[in-house]
Length: 300
Image (cartoon, rainbow, N blue to C red):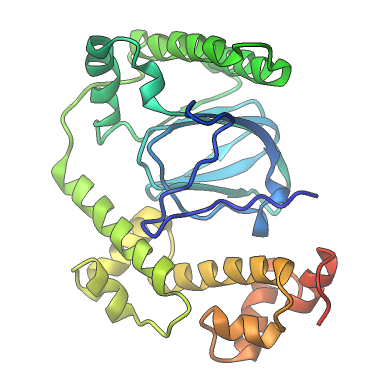
């Protein structure tokens, strides 16, 4: 089993490894079981993201909103939104993921400025969810299916065909009024930027003994405002999010290093091995040692 790890910058933007250097396009089918803890870390990127559920189900968080994606459903996540997917009832999910950078629409500057950038800058347009039991959902799935086939065949210049299909899909979304062009809402945008700053602080300092006061200070807000923002965007408390990230980091270290379990616990910011083990069992259903053994890595 190939373990998929999303690489993040300090501002928790994803480092996207595109299929070809210089062509900002990523197309991949994957299993959620290939991600540590069957969950991706909270992240954002400048790309437009499409998810299509081939089989199974998946939960998706976008700016604090939780969406259940059923089999054959499609989801578009607008650029620069905070998001991540995770398992539904600890079940696996086989899905298609497409990251499409807006610059690929840039064949004509006027068209880009008229039909693409205003959508990306619309704070109300966070995502679009298309259901498999609706005709429109089936139409959108058809476009994504074309892109999946083009990627699988990988014929010469298939990227050009993918861009053409994505342009047709984008035009269709505009025609049906599913993509709207509106002014940004400064208040909502401000809270989202504060959230990004606070999560970035956690990603940079998770190995240290950081407090709720310090997390709130990184966003220049009060403790209560900090908690409200985390609850709104991530459905977690700041400390809960911190511990979740620490646990996911410990999974990577258990798989890929020879460090002892005690060393890993302390390097991830846990002061007590017993507390680390208790949280690990609660989240992953096994002890850290069992997790390491199950993943065929280093025994301690």
